[in-house]
Length: 275
Image (tube, rainbow, N blue to C red; front, top):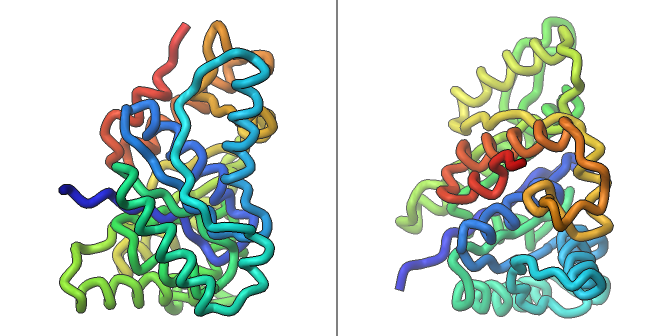
């Protein structure tokens, strides 16, 4: 049997847009015909899991049928968050084994912060997707810059964590981990700060070996659709819980470009612009 592809959406900083990105990757893959298993390791918040709960409820209330992932049971998230690392890891391994049996792709959303579960997930990844806000605040977890010149000094704590996962993967004889960094919540207007940030990001990418994916704008539509459990890929003549505008078309195009950059063949078609 072919082993499922494991995609981890990770960044140690909260508020970077990990769950939004994970949701859209999952839906794009589902529309491509792949089976997808989800593991939401943000045990207390569980935004990705809540999104798909919303999706099921909206479908039932509106008589619609939309693709759904499988969700191996991690149990009570809040209770598991209070448990010790050994118990957390044991429960995760059980759920991960189930996910591998059930799906073509295992998608793992990780919490903001360094946890044993997050480190374990990163070590299992075939691909790590890291969203970061358009800010040196977020960049600081990837690389440190000189406070006077803003020259890149060294990789920072999250980069070191990914490096450790890659090293352990290589020692174990596994395939290399593909790491993609995506700048998220871009402001509409270009700014001098963004040019500086982009320059440092490119230098860091060359130094430690990640790819830079296409950036995503800060769009209201992503937040508007969350309560319904919907994404821009779901919008159609029959499914329009919010007014459709040109901004939604642009959001589809952005997500399409991202699916292509991640190499998720077929997932980009979910975001094709339709009438």
